[in-house]
Length: 533
Image 1 (cartoon, one colour):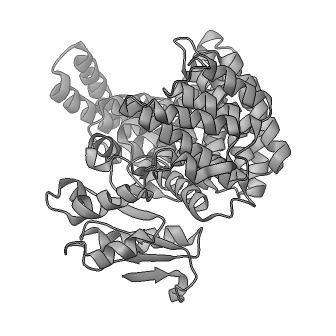
Image 2: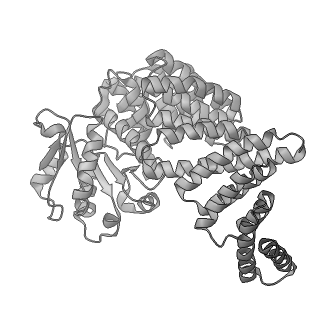
């Protein structure tokens, strides 16, 4: 097999990652994916130049020793009827229990992958097609690499973070004997009894899930911990394993016991269970366990630990769902400076918090503060497509704010302060309309700005705005008619006559003859008469 390494270094002694793809995707994706991996891990990425020849026994032997594979999912791969990767490589890797990261490289791939049985057991990552997808993909990729190659004895939170992610991975076949005395006696006997009474494939799958979870705790030296025992027993019962001494309903009680004894995984499970498992979620209990989890993790790993920050962020999101928006703002205000200091201002998690600030202020109806955070977001984004989407959201906010200020002015026309404040946002909106080339909104913004200039007696400014817009949109009747009124105030009869003549022609073309046109003709006659004097 060929390989790529960081800087072309010798691959000897480096962690190994495999790359499989449709033949057309090798040149398109290999270098990009290697660069993404090398951001986190100094490793060797192995691949074969020819992805069309059958999978040989020698190649299978080499593949079997690689612990993690990357696989770009493109339209070519999805529509290929005779692709070696889907027919041979992927089924072989799944049979080995090797994690395969299926990286979707085009829009609208997720639903297609989820519906295709050939991809069952892979870990889907979205590289593109959605706003912010690339940054989030790199975060998930980093998590997968840390879970597969990170020093878990030094970073137990990596194993915890990977627990939910890797539950989507193909499961290696384990037995209680393979874990031996590293499990508590009660848990070991429970698994043995359950193995003797397996009646359905669901129960068999539940047993394997229990063993996989147990194995992860064993690897962290926690296999005999009483809290771990209660947690695994509870999960096993809820997943369908039966026991003469325990009822399925005891599952939640056992997991609660584990949480009360300080196991963060149990707290995490309960927070999610109470948030999602009822027709009417019990958000009070969910918040309680999410807060406890953050508290315990902060003591274990420190308040600045990236995984603690992630869980604190999850708590803030849950507060929003529970309509505790002020508490969510408090948590986000604590989180953001720490994330910027620890992870960097442009880190995906820091950027996500900026978006959450905007969302919370939107819920509160505070559009101006929402715009402040959206402006900040636009200043942090590098990807042109993602930036354009964020700017479009910001433009909508500016327009909504200007409408709100105008409504406030209409309530008390003696106070012109709302109009002055509205102007600031309209000017910002105008700049964004030009940047985004949004013609429809540009027209509305220009008309609103010129109307405000007209109200304040700034007729020259109103004329300039309308003239510049009409130069590129010569058939906009509304702006042309507005410009007639402005020229009347400026007492520029020549320009008023020219624009009135244009308005008459355009009005008849769009709406036909009526009394308004007749009024314009009379006005034009008067203007020409005065100009000829």
